[in-house]
Image (tube, rainbow, N blue to C red; front, side, top):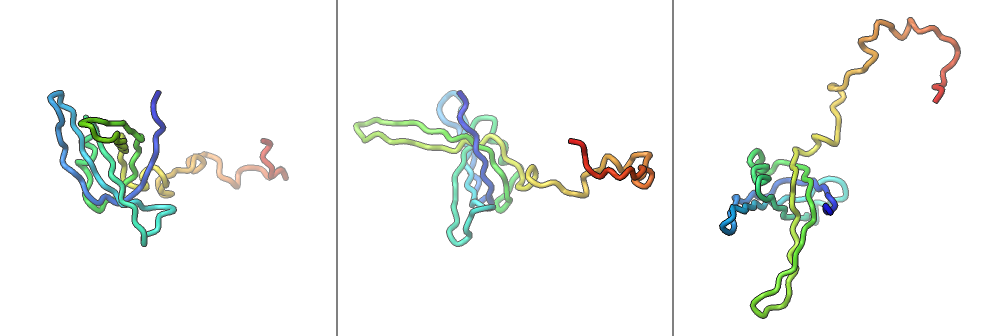
Length: 136
């Protein structure tokens, strides 16, 4: 079963290097964003670390510190115990998609074309039959 996906928006605070772990080529890259957008109070900033794994590490290559992004991520966690120490729980936010903020949330009105603009019939050519209501 796939875990639920979440979305967060923020300004990139830092971008870590891609690091390889173990002998099997597993790579991980961390980045930190300062949350922005609805519900965030600039007097009490929230800095959140997200991680990219494997082929997703390259997603940060096209961004710089200060860029505002929207990240899609899955919540991931695991338990660890060893060396006689108490059990610990590790939680990670595994990003799988990063876009410039606003790319998929707002539409530029100038980019929208009206389907009726190219119609051979102008609005004045439509007869006024007295019915203004749409029948559905």
